[in-house]
Length: 147
Image (cartoon, rainbow, N blue to C red; front, side, top):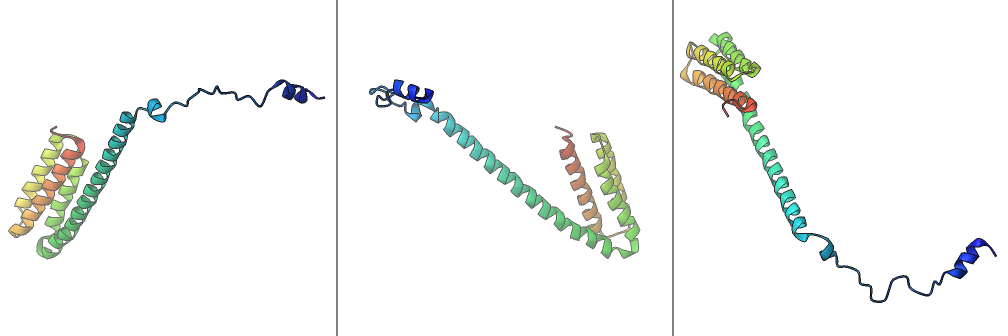
Protein backbone atom coordinates (compact mmCIF):
# COMPACT_ATOMS: atom_id res chain seq x y z
CA UNK A 1 0.00 0.00 0.00
CA UNK A 2 1.19 3.47 -0.84
CA UNK A 3 1.27 6.51 1.37
CA UNK A 4 -1.75 7.94 -0.43
CA UNK A 5 -3.78 4.85 0.34
CA UNK A 6 -2.75 5.11 4.01
CA UNK A 7 -4.04 8.69 4.16
CA UNK A 8 -7.27 7.77 2.38
CA UNK A 9 -7.96 5.03 4.85
CA UNK A 10 -7.46 7.39 7.80
CA UNK A 11 -9.92 10.03 6.49
CA UNK A 12 -13.62 9.41 6.81
CA UNK A 13 -15.08 10.87 3.61
CA UNK A 14 -18.64 9.96 4.59
CA UNK A 15 -18.82 12.35 7.52
CA UNK A 16 -19.49 15.92 6.40
CA UNK A 17 -16.86 18.49 7.34
CA UNK A 18 -19.48 21.15 8.06
CA UNK A 19 -21.73 20.73 11.10
CA UNK A 20 -25.43 20.16 10.38
CA UNK A 21 -26.54 23.35 12.15
CA UNK A 22 -24.13 25.52 10.11
CA UNK A 23 -25.86 28.28 8.13
CA UNK A 24 -24.26 30.42 5.47
CA UNK A 25 -24.45 34.10 6.35
CA UNK A 26 -26.70 36.16 4.10
CA UNK A 27 -24.99 38.37 1.57
CA UNK A 28 -27.01 41.35 2.81
CA UNK A 29 -25.44 41.05 6.24
CA UNK A 30 -21.94 41.03 4.74
CA UNK A 31 -22.38 43.97 2.35
CA UNK A 32 -23.31 47.53 3.18
CA UNK A 33 -26.11 47.93 0.64
CA UNK A 34 -26.56 51.59 1.55
CA UNK A 35 -22.94 52.25 0.63
CA UNK A 36 -23.32 50.33 -2.62
CA UNK A 37 -26.40 52.34 -3.50
CA UNK A 38 -24.70 55.66 -2.76
CA UNK A 39 -21.65 54.64 -4.83
CA UNK A 40 -23.96 53.65 -7.70
CA UNK A 41 -25.80 56.99 -7.48
CA UNK A 42 -22.52 58.93 -7.37
CA UNK A 43 -21.22 56.97 -10.36
CA UNK A 44 -24.40 57.71 -12.29
CA UNK A 45 -24.17 61.41 -11.38
CA UNK A 46 -20.54 61.53 -12.53
CA UNK A 47 -21.53 59.84 -15.80
CA UNK A 48 -24.36 62.33 -16.35
CA UNK A 49 -22.09 65.28 -15.50
CA UNK A 50 -19.50 63.99 -17.95
CA UNK A 51 -22.11 63.59 -20.69
CA UNK A 52 -23.36 67.15 -20.07
CA UNK A 53 -19.79 68.49 -20.22
CA UNK A 54 -19.17 66.68 -23.52
CA UNK A 55 -22.45 67.99 -24.93
CA UNK A 56 -21.58 71.55 -23.85
CA UNK A 57 -18.12 71.25 -25.40
CA UNK A 58 -19.61 70.05 -28.68
CA UNK A 59 -22.10 72.93 -28.66
CA UNK A 60 -19.25 75.37 -28.02
CA UNK A 61 -17.27 73.88 -30.90
CA UNK A 62 -20.30 74.20 -33.14
CA UNK A 63 -20.83 77.85 -32.27
CA UNK A 64 -17.10 78.62 -32.52
CA UNK A 65 -16.77 77.03 -35.93
CA UNK A 66 -19.80 79.01 -37.10
CA UNK A 67 -17.81 82.14 -36.28
CA UNK A 68 -15.05 81.08 -38.70
CA UNK A 69 -17.41 81.64 -41.63
CA UNK A 70 -18.33 85.03 -40.23
CA UNK A 71 -14.64 85.96 -39.91
CA UNK A 72 -14.02 84.98 -43.52
CA UNK A 73 -17.01 87.07 -44.53
CA UNK A 74 -15.68 90.10 -42.61
CA UNK A 75 -12.33 89.85 -44.42
CA UNK A 76 -13.86 89.20 -47.86
CA UNK A 77 -16.39 92.03 -47.82
CA UNK A 78 -13.77 94.60 -46.81
CA UNK A 79 -11.51 94.32 -49.83
CA UNK A 80 -10.51 97.99 -49.73
CA UNK A 81 -9.17 97.76 -46.17
CA UNK A 82 -8.45 94.05 -45.95
CA UNK A 83 -4.96 94.62 -44.53
CA UNK A 84 -6.34 96.68 -41.66
CA UNK A 85 -9.00 94.07 -40.89
CA UNK A 86 -6.38 91.31 -40.94
CA UNK A 87 -4.23 93.40 -38.58
CA UNK A 88 -7.14 93.59 -36.13
CA UNK A 89 -7.69 89.82 -36.45
CA UNK A 90 -3.97 89.30 -35.77
CA UNK A 91 -4.30 91.42 -32.62
CA UNK A 92 -7.29 89.34 -31.56
CA UNK A 93 -5.22 86.16 -31.90
CA UNK A 94 -2.38 87.76 -29.92
CA UNK A 95 -4.70 87.80 -26.91
CA UNK A 96 -4.10 84.03 -26.71
CA UNK A 97 -0.39 84.56 -26.00
CA UNK A 98 -0.86 86.44 -22.71
CA UNK A 99 0.12 85.07 -19.32
CA UNK A 100 -1.46 87.61 -16.97
CA UNK A 101 -4.81 89.29 -16.60
CA UNK A 102 -3.19 92.70 -17.12
CA UNK A 103 -1.68 91.56 -20.44
CA UNK A 104 -5.09 90.25 -21.53
CA UNK A 105 -6.73 93.59 -20.73
CA UNK A 106 -4.02 95.53 -22.60
CA UNK A 107 -4.33 93.30 -25.69
CA UNK A 108 -8.11 93.62 -25.65
CA UNK A 109 -7.89 97.42 -25.43
CA UNK A 110 -5.50 97.35 -28.42
CA UNK A 111 -8.04 95.32 -30.39
CA UNK A 112 -10.82 97.77 -29.53
CA UNK A 113 -8.66 100.77 -30.50
CA UNK A 114 -7.64 99.24 -33.83
CA UNK A 115 -11.19 98.18 -34.64
CA UNK A 116 -12.61 101.60 -33.80
CA UNK A 117 -10.03 103.31 -36.04
CA UNK A 118 -10.96 101.17 -39.04
CA UNK A 119 -12.35 102.99 -42.03
CA UNK A 120 -15.12 100.44 -42.35
CA UNK A 121 -18.83 99.89 -41.73
CA UNK A 122 -20.26 99.57 -38.22
CA UNK A 123 -21.11 95.89 -38.69
CA UNK A 124 -17.45 95.00 -39.42
CA UNK A 125 -16.21 97.03 -36.47
CA UNK A 126 -18.83 95.48 -34.20
CA UNK A 127 -17.96 91.96 -35.41
CA UNK A 128 -14.26 92.47 -34.77
CA UNK A 129 -14.86 93.91 -31.31
CA UNK A 130 -17.18 90.99 -30.52
CA UNK A 131 -14.56 88.45 -31.66
CA UNK A 132 -11.94 90.26 -29.61
CA UNK A 133 -14.19 90.24 -26.55
CA UNK A 134 -14.92 86.53 -27.03
CA UNK A 135 -11.20 85.76 -27.17
CA UNK A 136 -10.51 88.03 -24.17
CA UNK A 137 -13.23 86.35 -22.06
CA UNK A 138 -12.06 82.90 -23.21
CA UNK A 139 -8.48 83.58 -22.09
CA UNK A 140 -9.65 85.01 -18.78
CA UNK A 141 -11.73 81.88 -18.18
CA UNK A 142 -8.94 79.58 -19.34
CA UNK A 143 -6.43 81.02 -16.87
CA UNK A 144 -9.02 81.71 -14.17
CA UNK A 145 -8.27 85.44 -14.13
CA UNK A 146 -10.55 87.45 -11.90
CA UNK A 147 -11.76 84.49 -9.82
